[in-house]
Image (cartoon, rainbow, N blue to C red):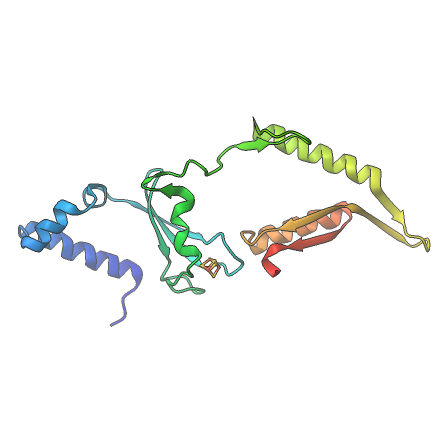
Length: 194
Ligand code: SF4
């Protein structure tokens, strides 16, 4: 009989609950005393997501208790990886958590380093978005090419390039490409193809 992931978890929960109701054997009691209480005493939230490392798009399950990520594993119901994760993705958990604590090096705010500066300044998202838009417009206006050397209309700028990342999904890539073409960018590439 084939079990789906949900059926498997349900069956596992029923067996565990049965063991505790019966008082448990010595092994079960030892397991209960050593197990992280957060897992045994509370229901944790499971959220599915996509691995951020490459363009493979493997599915993951993030187990979290509120903001506290307890584990990240391959999603057995995902059609691409069917529960498997490559060695790179085995470390996904460390993006969020190191030694049981929130990874202090995980960037959660906008940081800006001005040209020539050695230090980073914390900025708001509004500031960052406006600044990006301003600089794109300024660069595009200053470098827009309406006609090429043969007089052919090209309406492009060669002064801005765009590099996508492997975490972009199809829909995001479609929108980014549409925006690029609208701006007249010709240098558009993605890291996922490298
Ligand atoms: S890094 Fe590994 S697990 Fe992540 S998408 Fe690529 S192949 Fe899949």
